[in-house]
Image 1 (cartoon, rainbow, N blue to C red):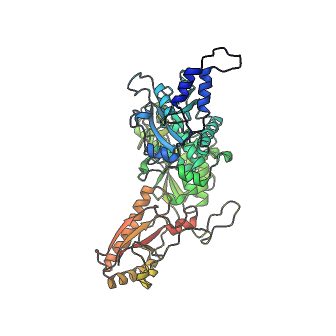
Image 2 (cartoon, one colour):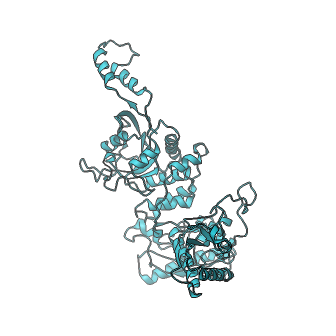
Image 3 (tube, rainbow, N blue to C red):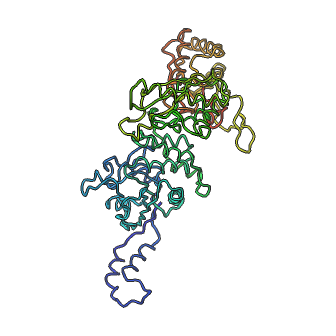
Length: 560
């Protein structure tokens, strides 16, 4: 992070006493310039590390706001708004506090106010990036200031376009330099509100430096908009995040990434997350039967029931691939409209739109027994029907999952250029099984979690598997014979899908096992149950085999 040069009072006094000669050659610098150069050339005496900023700003997770929507929350950063960490001590995102400023208010469509620039400089930031063009000519290009520890700091102010690939690279390069160079302070990326454009750059930063995949990054973007993501025009931003490929020359080490990458918040409202038809292609296990997916890239003009070249539409290509790859997948195509016109006409219009997609899939060889279509008219609008720009998003097709196969995890994913991953090749935590408890209870430490290995869950399955009942009956016998033993039935899932659903699923699984044991005569005083979602994997969720193992039930020994 930023190195600072200490300004010493004796040097100032020496300059005052002896800098009397005002005769300069053409190439010679003024005494004031020489003084500043001499101060800035001093060897730095201290660093401001990522850990320093993490503690200073009390950075909890990626959604934590250091300054709020009105610029309040951290006085030394006033002039910013909705400022949040992207990388601890390296990169931050937010907006410029103009409209809500306590004084000298101005239109929101402006770069940072002067106090915002000065405060970032005093906090040790090396750069600020304005992601729009409007009114940037009113802002200074740099600032030199005294910093929080009494030293000098230089902040450069850049204007880079969020939609320009070359500018995206330049911004990520600034972040890379801040991450890998101890002499460079944090970078502040900002737009007007701190939601959309800064969220895009933040999502790409997480993809570049923290290993986020496209879906994780898109969900992060949606969460970071504070609910202001309900316009179809933002689909372009999601596509930019999805299409981004990290730059090889800007890679950082895993150890550095682990140190600077904040976590996502533990509690996430799944209703705010983004899902598209690609999920159905690559992670079908994450989507339950009954789930509906919007085909965001399938759009109809007002009053139109078709569009040209459907075979080139990316969403229809992915839907076709999902149906071809998953023979047991059955879907309903639902057509929707805006609310302009009569409801009866809109229902008929939406039905024709759904049939257009239906006919396209039939023409590509999909069996008609696997697809149906229905028109819903203006029901369930996704966006406001008040404006023409948002009504367009309501003229849509949704794919509802009617049925699908239970995923087969016997065939493992291959790494590119490598052999199939095996159990032995997955170097992860080793988990004891319940049999250890039966064989030698004294060898099991209190607090240990033991896997009931015969409880083998398929995705989304909740009921007690029949093949597990024999081992569960052994547990019943053991608990009756050892009334002092107490334990917790723990449900776990893999990391597929939304964590909110995973928590519910794991809770339901653990409760089902609990109820089975109680009905067999185990005392309620001996056992309890809880679902932990995907929080405690025992194998990597990167591979299919690991996901299968993580869908498990553990018995945690609480006392003996």
